[in-house]
Image (cartoon, rainbow, N blue to C red):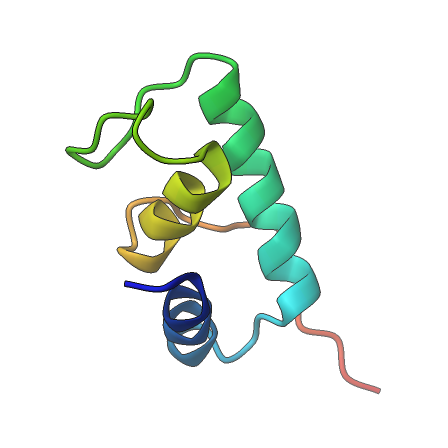
Length: 73
């Protein structure tokens, strides 16, 4: 699946999340992967970029994104 399709899937499934919040989540998971965290997918981490792998994990719902509050007003 293309990166744009993964991004659209994530944002569609998480209506309270915006592009900025997704970018922060991907960056945090990418950092974890680069620092030795195991992949939650059956994909060789050396075969794809860490940021792409992080996005795939989030799109599949394998990584839970917490800490964002929907503020209106």
